[in-house]
Amino acid sequence: MAVIAGNWKMHKGPSETREFFDRLDAGAVGKDHELIIFPPVASLSAAVSARRAASTQVGLGVQNIHWEDGGAFTGETSAPIAADAGAHYVLVGHSERRHVFGESDRETHDKVAAARRHGLVPVLCVGETLEERREERVDEVILRQLEAALPALGDAKERFLLAYEPVWAIGTGETATPADASAAHETLHVRLADAFGATVAAGIPILYGGSVKPANAGELLSAPHVGGVLVGGASLDPESFVAIARAGR
Ligand code: PGA
Image 1 (cartoon, rainbow, N blue to C red):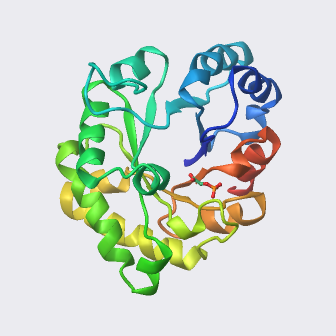
Image 2 (cartoon, protein in one colour):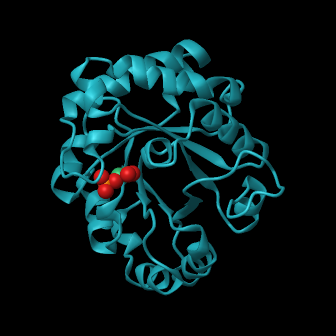
């Protein structure tokens, strides 16, 4: 079952969130896809009610958490608060967190650990910059980012998702070719199999993200080792979000 996840970033307040769910034809997607939306945290409770009203199975998550369970951290959201507010998933280490807000590998580890303590499913994002790709350091960078989080995953028997998002492809209109995506996903999959065994690794979906849209989703979703997509801009419109899922049949 392919995972089709929408990262809304800093878009859509509660009213636009309700409107999205009113217009979302999740039934058109069918049962072979799992839909997840990451709204801004202030819109999460609107998403929870709108999802209930629309009777859809869409999963909900937050885009970031703090690694501590509580305390004097103005402006932050903890894993227990996110879980209590209705989040089931959390993005950890998105490239904008790493490159705009300076989040370190150590912090991503601690955030994955916090997610696990409170029953949130972490979606760890990894990916290289254009410069790192030109220097042929893709595997080194994505394995380092994965490696940093491994100790927080225990035996990885509880659900965990990985997203490969090359930084140069995010919000730029540039997409990795299906072959590039497959190669990076295979590198990650092999490391997961090494850490957790082949059976557990086979159950860990690796999503591709970076300028995914209805026109390129089909070929990306059918590429080897691609278990789904993490979509930014094209997830803001319910029709295009559904079209992406339908392209993956
Ligand atoms: P994009 O963003 O689809 O707008 O490139 C993807 C992401 O940042 O998750």
